Amino acid sequence: MAVQSIGPETLKYIATSKVRSIAADKIEATFRSRCIDLISKPLGTQILSFSDEWFAAAENLTTPTPPVRKPGVFVHSGAWYDGWETRRHNPEPFDWVVIRLGVASGKVEGVEIDTTFFNGNHAPEIAVEGCFGSNDEEIKHPSFKGWETILEKQDCGPSQRHAWALEKITDKAYTHVRLLMFPDGGIARFRLYGVAVPVFPQSIDDVFDLAAAVNGGVAVSCSDQHFGTKDNILLPGRGKDMGDGWETKRTRGEHVDWAIVKLGMSGEVDKIVIDTAHFRGNFPQKVQVFAGTFETEPSSRDSGWIEVLSPQNAGPDKEHKYGENVLQNVKGSVYSHMKLVIIPDGGVKRFRVFGRRRA
Image (cartoon, rainbow, N blue to C red):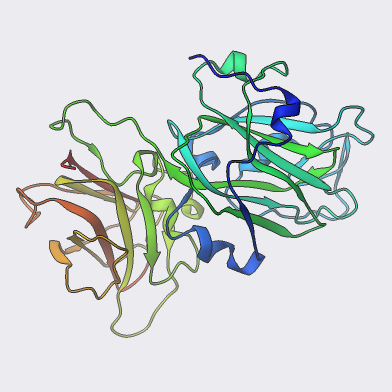
């Protein structure tokens, strides 16, 4: 796919939107109710190329968990760091890393740069560029000229989370991004908040996972996520351990926990899968599912919720599959949101909603 070439002088003045700085303690509230991290490693994102990674690997940028520290631990290149760190005295204007998104393409709403534990060796300034294309070999090459600015150059400080919201969101979608670090240094994590622009099946009768993050699904809210985040239930695959699922804290007495998912496309539901992979002593006793059609984000107590799966016994480390013989109020009904209820608490690895698009 041909990509318009933009010279460096033009890039200097292009900005896709006005930028608003987000305080570290507001990042989750700002982005996590309507966005996913488009470059989270579990989505299948790939580091295609980089200018340098002498002290610490660029791959660490997309690790979904917070950075950690190992004081006093040294490797061949120097002190061990959980992030991306390049050599000192870069002769070029900036270091860079090229990343292919974990979704077919995505629209960007915000950027987070985390320099946690990088103090004295942090990146002084950063910028983010993007492009839309299919030729990884061309895009990853240093001579590629098709980049356009997503986030213009921003200052960074030591050992802290930095985030910026793009005030004017356009219909521009990207398949790849390039993170620029001026002139060199270290960054622990890079998050690119936005919404997936999926490639849906051509036929409206084809069945696919309406809730999957790669198909535009977003976990918009939940009652609790003490041990594992709600966003994990929409990721591909069955994960690697309990850490990449959704897990709530222990409760006492009568209680339920819940997570609300906005489907990537409104549709008619055929099958629901609730996976408790790796949750062997902390799975829910029962699971229950409600569905609804909403123009705005619903609350858990909204009157528009309709029960589509009555409470069912759950088991450890297992995919629980519920088809037409168990589901109710789904035939001929079109829903935009689902509410997964776990009784009374516990952990769920994945939540799948298979159906046909009807919007």
